[in-house]
Amino acid sequence: MQHRMLHYGRLALGWIREQDAKLILAALMTASSMFLFIEIADEVVERDTQTLDEKIIMALREPNDLSNPIGPIWVEEAVRDLSALGSHTVLTLFVGFVLAFLILIKRRKAALFVMGAAAGGALLSHWLKIFFARPRPDIVSHATHIMTYSFPSGHSMLSAIVYLTLGALMTELVSRKRLKSYFLISAMFISFLVGLSRIYLGVHYPSDVMAGWCAGLFWAALITLIARLNALRSKN
View (cartoon, rainbow, N blue to C red):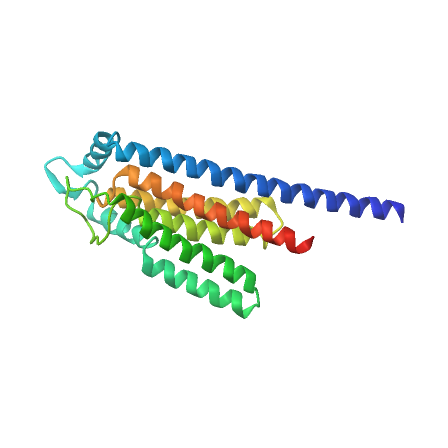
Protein backbone atom coordinates (compact mmCIF):
# COMPACT_ATOMS: atom_id res chain seq x y z
CA MET A 1 0.00 0.00 0.00
CA GLN A 2 2.79 2.40 0.97
CA HIS A 3 4.71 1.53 -2.19
CA ARG A 4 1.63 2.30 -4.30
CA MET A 5 1.11 5.63 -2.54
CA LEU A 6 4.74 6.58 -3.25
CA HIS A 7 4.28 5.61 -6.89
CA TYR A 8 1.19 7.78 -7.30
CA GLY A 9 2.92 10.59 -5.44
CA ARG A 10 5.84 10.50 -7.84
CA LEU A 11 3.49 10.52 -10.81
CA ALA A 12 1.63 13.51 -9.41
CA LEU A 13 4.88 15.35 -8.72
CA GLY A 14 6.10 14.59 -12.23
CA TRP A 15 2.85 15.93 -13.71
CA ILE A 16 3.12 19.14 -11.67
CA ARG A 17 6.71 19.64 -12.76
CA GLU A 18 5.74 19.04 -16.39
CA GLN A 19 2.93 21.59 -16.16
CA ASP A 20 5.25 24.12 -14.52
CA ALA A 21 7.80 23.57 -17.29
CA LYS A 22 5.14 24.09 -19.97
CA LEU A 23 3.96 27.29 -18.31
CA ILE A 24 7.50 28.63 -18.07
CA LEU A 25 8.20 27.70 -21.70
CA ALA A 26 4.99 29.39 -22.90
CA ALA A 27 5.81 32.51 -20.89
CA LEU A 28 9.37 32.64 -22.28
CA MET A 29 8.14 32.18 -25.85
CA THR A 30 5.55 34.93 -25.38
CA ALA A 31 8.10 37.40 -24.02
CA SER A 32 10.92 36.56 -26.45
CA SER A 33 8.73 36.64 -29.57
CA MET A 34 7.24 39.98 -28.53
CA PHE A 35 10.73 41.38 -27.97
CA LEU A 36 11.91 40.17 -31.39
CA PHE A 37 8.87 41.65 -33.11
CA ILE A 38 9.45 45.03 -31.47
CA GLU A 39 13.11 44.94 -32.54
CA ILE A 40 12.25 44.09 -36.15
CA ALA A 41 9.48 46.71 -36.24
CA ASP A 42 11.88 49.35 -34.95
CA GLU A 43 14.42 48.48 -37.65
CA VAL A 44 11.72 48.58 -40.34
CA VAL A 45 10.38 51.96 -39.21
CA GLU A 46 13.92 53.35 -39.28
CA ARG A 47 14.36 51.74 -42.76
CA ASP A 48 17.50 49.97 -41.59
CA THR A 49 16.34 46.72 -43.23
CA GLN A 50 15.38 48.21 -46.59
CA THR A 51 18.65 47.61 -48.43
CA LEU A 52 18.99 43.99 -47.31
CA ASP A 53 15.29 43.35 -47.94
CA GLU A 54 15.58 44.54 -51.53
CA LYS A 55 18.79 42.60 -52.18
CA ILE A 56 17.17 39.33 -51.08
CA ILE A 57 14.10 39.90 -53.26
CA MET A 58 16.27 40.79 -56.26
CA ALA A 59 18.36 37.64 -55.71
CA LEU A 60 15.21 35.57 -56.21
CA ARG A 61 14.53 37.07 -59.67
CA GLU A 62 16.04 36.40 -63.07
CA PRO A 63 18.65 39.16 -63.66
CA ASN A 64 17.45 39.78 -67.23
CA ASP A 65 13.74 39.68 -66.36
CA LEU A 66 12.73 40.91 -62.89
CA SER A 67 9.14 39.89 -63.51
CA ASN A 68 10.22 36.24 -63.54
CA PRO A 69 11.21 34.43 -60.30
CA ILE A 70 14.25 32.14 -60.52
CA GLY A 71 13.66 28.49 -61.30
CA PRO A 72 11.41 26.58 -63.72
CA ILE A 73 7.72 27.45 -64.04
CA TRP A 74 6.63 24.44 -61.99
CA VAL A 75 8.54 25.80 -59.00
CA GLU A 76 6.59 29.06 -59.19
CA GLU A 77 3.31 27.14 -59.34
CA ALA A 78 4.35 24.97 -56.38
CA VAL A 79 5.27 28.07 -54.38
CA ARG A 80 1.83 29.57 -55.09
CA ASP A 81 0.27 26.39 -53.72
CA LEU A 82 2.40 26.63 -50.58
CA SER A 83 1.46 30.28 -50.17
CA ALA A 84 -2.22 29.32 -50.20
CA LEU A 85 -1.68 27.32 -47.00
CA GLY A 86 -1.48 30.67 -45.22
CA SER A 87 -4.37 32.36 -47.01
CA HIS A 88 -7.51 33.48 -45.20
CA THR A 89 -9.64 31.14 -47.29
CA VAL A 90 -7.66 27.97 -46.57
CA LEU A 91 -7.10 28.79 -42.90
CA THR A 92 -10.78 29.65 -42.38
CA LEU A 93 -11.87 26.34 -43.89
CA PHE A 94 -9.24 24.46 -41.90
CA VAL A 95 -10.20 26.10 -38.61
CA GLY A 96 -13.90 25.61 -39.38
CA PHE A 97 -13.49 21.85 -39.86
CA VAL A 98 -11.41 21.60 -36.67
CA LEU A 99 -14.02 23.55 -34.68
CA ALA A 100 -16.82 21.33 -35.99
CA PHE A 101 -14.85 18.23 -34.99
CA LEU A 102 -14.12 19.55 -31.48
CA ILE A 103 -17.77 20.46 -30.96
CA LEU A 104 -18.90 17.02 -32.15
CA ILE A 105 -16.63 15.29 -29.62
CA LYS A 106 -17.77 17.78 -26.95
CA ARG A 107 -14.41 19.47 -26.47
CA ARG A 108 -15.91 22.93 -26.15
CA LYS A 109 -13.01 24.47 -24.25
CA ALA A 110 -10.62 23.31 -26.93
CA ALA A 111 -12.95 24.75 -29.58
CA LEU A 112 -12.98 28.12 -27.80
CA PHE A 113 -9.19 27.94 -27.56
CA VAL A 114 -8.82 27.44 -31.31
CA MET A 115 -11.47 30.00 -32.22
CA GLY A 116 -9.97 32.62 -29.91
CA ALA A 117 -6.50 32.06 -31.30
CA ALA A 118 -7.61 32.27 -34.95
CA ALA A 119 -10.09 35.16 -34.66
CA GLY A 120 -7.93 37.19 -32.30
CA GLY A 121 -4.87 36.60 -34.46
CA ALA A 122 -6.69 37.79 -37.58
CA LEU A 123 -7.77 40.99 -35.83
CA LEU A 124 -4.26 41.58 -34.49
CA SER A 125 -2.75 41.06 -37.95
CA HIS A 126 -5.22 43.52 -39.50
CA TRP A 127 -4.54 46.14 -36.83
CA LEU A 128 -0.75 45.81 -37.15
CA LYS A 129 -0.90 46.23 -40.92
CA ILE A 130 -2.95 49.41 -40.60
CA PHE A 131 -0.73 50.75 -37.81
CA PHE A 132 2.54 50.33 -39.72
CA ALA A 133 1.05 50.88 -43.19
CA ARG A 134 4.19 49.71 -44.96
CA PRO A 135 3.80 49.62 -48.76
CA ARG A 136 4.37 46.36 -50.59
CA PRO A 137 7.68 45.77 -52.41
CA ASP A 138 7.63 47.61 -55.74
CA ILE A 139 11.07 46.73 -57.09
CA VAL A 140 9.71 43.61 -58.81
CA SER A 141 6.32 42.62 -60.17
CA HIS A 142 4.17 40.52 -57.87
CA ALA A 143 3.52 36.91 -58.81
CA THR A 144 0.16 36.95 -57.03
CA HIS A 145 -2.57 39.46 -56.21
CA ILE A 146 -2.29 41.63 -53.08
CA MET A 147 -4.83 43.84 -51.32
CA THR A 148 -3.33 44.87 -47.96
CA TYR A 149 -0.25 46.50 -46.47
CA SER A 150 3.05 44.66 -46.22
CA PHE A 151 4.10 44.67 -42.54
CA PRO A 152 3.82 42.18 -40.96
CA SER A 153 3.16 39.34 -43.38
CA GLY A 154 -0.39 38.18 -42.70
CA HIS A 155 0.19 34.78 -44.32
CA SER A 156 3.25 34.14 -42.13
CA MET A 157 1.56 35.39 -38.98
CA LEU A 158 -1.75 33.60 -39.39
CA SER A 159 -0.18 30.33 -40.52
CA ALA A 160 2.04 30.40 -37.43
CA ILE A 161 -0.94 31.10 -35.19
CA VAL A 162 -3.26 28.47 -36.64
CA TYR A 163 -0.78 25.65 -37.19
CA LEU A 164 1.11 26.19 -33.93
CA THR A 165 -2.16 26.39 -31.99
CA LEU A 166 -3.38 23.16 -33.53
CA GLY A 167 0.05 21.61 -33.00
CA ALA A 168 -0.12 22.53 -29.31
CA LEU A 169 -3.63 21.08 -29.14
CA MET A 170 -2.46 17.82 -30.70
CA THR A 171 0.36 17.50 -28.15
CA GLU A 172 -2.31 17.26 -25.45
CA LEU A 173 -3.81 14.22 -27.15
CA VAL A 174 -0.64 12.12 -27.20
CA SER A 175 1.74 11.06 -24.44
CA ARG A 176 4.89 10.18 -26.36
CA LYS A 177 7.39 13.03 -26.56
CA ARG A 178 8.38 11.99 -30.07
CA LEU A 179 4.82 12.56 -31.29
CA LYS A 180 4.56 15.87 -29.45
CA SER A 181 7.75 17.04 -31.16
CA TYR A 182 6.46 15.81 -34.52
CA PHE A 183 3.29 17.93 -34.31
CA LEU A 184 5.10 21.09 -33.26
CA ILE A 185 7.92 20.69 -35.80
CA SER A 186 5.38 20.04 -38.57
CA ALA A 187 3.46 23.19 -37.61
CA MET A 188 6.62 25.29 -37.64
CA PHE A 189 7.75 23.81 -40.96
CA ILE A 190 4.46 24.64 -42.69
CA SER A 191 4.59 28.22 -41.42
CA PHE A 192 8.23 28.43 -42.52
CA LEU A 193 7.34 27.36 -46.06
CA VAL A 194 4.45 29.82 -46.23
CA GLY A 195 6.72 32.67 -45.20
CA LEU A 196 9.40 31.80 -47.74
CA SER A 197 6.77 31.57 -50.47
CA ARG A 198 5.71 35.17 -49.84
CA ILE A 199 9.27 36.40 -50.32
CA TYR A 200 9.74 34.31 -53.47
CA LEU A 201 6.52 35.69 -54.97
CA GLY A 202 7.76 39.22 -54.36
CA VAL A 203 4.77 40.31 -52.26
CA HIS A 204 6.68 40.68 -48.97
CA TYR A 205 10.05 41.81 -47.75
CA PRO A 206 11.98 39.27 -45.64
CA SER A 207 11.55 41.55 -42.61
CA ASP A 208 7.76 41.38 -43.11
CA VAL A 209 7.92 37.61 -42.93
CA MET A 210 10.23 37.56 -39.91
CA ALA A 211 7.91 39.94 -38.09
CA GLY A 212 4.92 37.82 -39.08
CA TRP A 213 6.50 34.70 -37.62
CA CYS A 214 7.34 36.54 -34.38
CA ALA A 215 3.87 38.04 -34.06
CA GLY A 216 2.25 34.67 -34.81
CA LEU A 217 4.42 32.88 -32.27
CA PHE A 218 3.66 35.58 -29.71
CA TRP A 219 -0.09 35.23 -30.12
CA ALA A 220 -0.07 31.42 -30.20
CA ALA A 221 2.15 31.27 -27.10
CA LEU A 222 0.03 33.85 -25.29
CA ILE A 223 -3.20 31.98 -25.98
CA THR A 224 -1.55 28.71 -24.92
CA LEU A 225 -0.30 30.33 -21.71
CA ILE A 226 -3.76 31.65 -20.88
CA ALA A 227 -5.35 28.27 -21.61
CA ARG A 228 -2.87 26.44 -19.36
CA LEU A 229 -3.34 28.91 -16.52
CA ASN A 230 -7.12 28.48 -16.74
CA ALA A 231 -6.78 24.70 -16.82
CA LEU A 232 -4.59 24.69 -13.69
CA ARG A 233 -6.90 27.13 -11.92
CA SER A 234 -9.94 24.94 -12.60
CA LYS A 235 -8.16 21.90 -11.12
CA ASN A 236 -7.22 23.73 -7.91
